[in-house]
Image 1: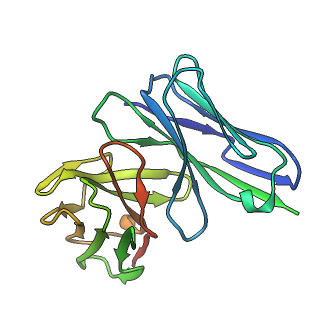
Image 2: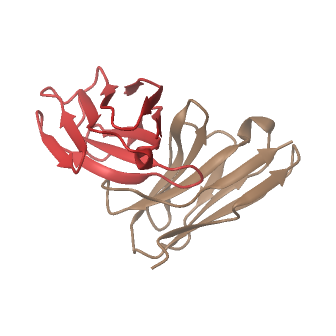
Length: 111
Length: 111
């Protein structure tokens, strides 16, 4: 069974601080996605990474896929209150399998 | 486009009652999914479908049944609700095993 471990589970920071969220597994994934979920809504896709070592940037968010495609990280620079939410990583194993979700990181950014 | 819609938004059941959750998507997606989300557990896949008339079990299928009679609809049934099925249920759809688009969720309480 493939598992994705996310850390930390909770993160509470001040506006302007930087943070990193980690998503780790002992299994290899063909691709990995990051979703963001706001209270009372469904998750929304932020990015998909496919190639080992790949780095993608989305404004103040930087996503990295590990060289071995077993882990990923999400780094937020100068966090803002609008970044508050639940961040979920989701990996796809062998071709043709459904996504496996991590348990999520709840981020709270206060002004 | 409405995207993915779910009916109802909220429901309270007594133990042993049955109900059906309806998911509809207007994006012509082949793949549809049902997840449940519990605090600290992330998203867990209940059942999914890769096309009209086909369904498959996910990680936590026990106590649930599904049907995909029309491409745009995916129904989740609880034949005899139990308190352990109290959760927030999310439906999602996708083109193949790519980005998943989520509905707003159904909050179910079983007393």
